[in-house]
Length: 113
Length: 113
Image 1 (cartoon, rainbow over the protein chains, first blue to last red):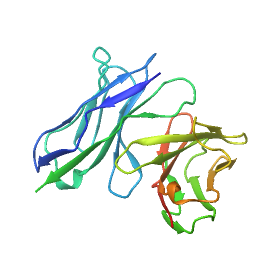
Image 2 (tube, each protein chain N blue to C red; image 1 turned 90 degrees about the vertical axis):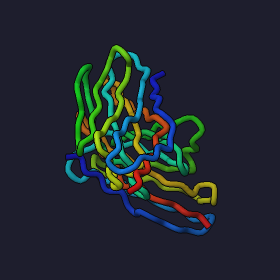
Image 3 (spheres, one colour; image 1 turned 30 degrees about the vertical axis):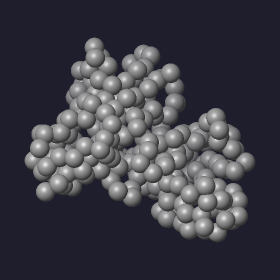
């Protein structure tokens, strides 16, 4: 079945450091890919998405490019802030049917001043 | 947008009582709603999928008689944890989806004493 693998955390960075959180997927067909963020004690918020190969999703300084050839959707940010501390989930959904999102295990990011 | 309201955000109850959690899509009609459970520092575990007007489809290992799901309208789904026990304590999250958008509730933290 479809699956998402993302790098295990926790990741601890200093403020203004460069962030990469790796995400690879296994899926039949052409899924849509997502990054969700969960701040402490809260639900999930959609951070960005891409629906087809070579699409780049971006939001709040975060970016991720849908790479079909490497089945990857790595999350990047050039300069992280303390407020970016959260858990980040990579997810996919097939583009057909009403199937639920498939989530990675999440990566906890802590940014220190 | 895809605004989803989940209520209550936090509930503490005695063992043996039942707790109802509501999930509402505020600015769209959700043909499908998903219920997830999240254990500390872990990813989301899909519990069930509900489509408006039909019975929910439960994932393997999830007791349908314990976790009652009702999706009576296109904007409301409820999850009732019946005869709650301490092992049911967890963070429950819903999501609502229509054709091309999906939103997540903020989650409900259930603590069973």
